[in-house]
Length: 361
Image (tube, rainbow, N blue to C red; front, side, top):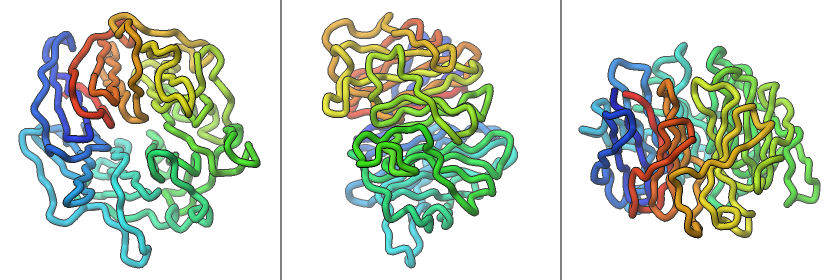
């Protein structure tokens, strides 16, 4: 079995492969050189997995490329497949998220974008159309830009009900639909927005990332702008699970496929100090849905460590014994082949790592 690790950076996409149980890795030269790759998906719903890459070129603008031979060749359409209709008066900044739908919709792919919007593809990512109900939501005019821009960065289709989905944005918070995207409601009860006059608003939270538990799709985990939360009712309400972490600030939140209740995060000191707490490189894992947390350090740098990890720069693969991966803003990529117990270096001296995705292919 080959494990594929796709590494999106500010200067291209690197594909790392392992054929020996993730002990060693071979890293490609950059695909799409000098192009920011903010989103990658590995779509395994077809005989040969399809790779999708959301790219942003300073010259050509944003687009989505796809490959049906694991990166051997790429189809880059002449016209960007994700574009706002003329009547919206909006232009696409970049694609922040590419998410295949569940097994009941084998050709559907979702794209979350900047500005905050959701697009749907019914042809495997070749073309996309705007989900108008979210774009036309009366709250949209009050969704502000976070430090990284205004974007839908989390798209979580329900695995058993194609009409249900959760999205999250910075800023704006969590929204969900139960009618296939025809209507959307904010779902932020219990998530604090300390930077607003009303710290417990209906919407306006700066949610950084949301993950869905593999054993219970009603259980969600959120890393907020200061705050770590769990929902046990599909996002209807949230409770803090920050106790046991050295800080409640950070960006990624990753659930481990095949291990219900197991999640990972990478805490940073604070919003004004975006480096690891005590300058120590530590991944934190919970095996009990956030009740307790364990610092994971074996194989990680022991010297003072200052890089941060962005919201999509941490992921897990779908192996029986899960692999976990993260990339840093200083270009290092680390991998664990034993669910976080130990780590090794996959690559160093890469450009700024923006996103990682991994799967057995």
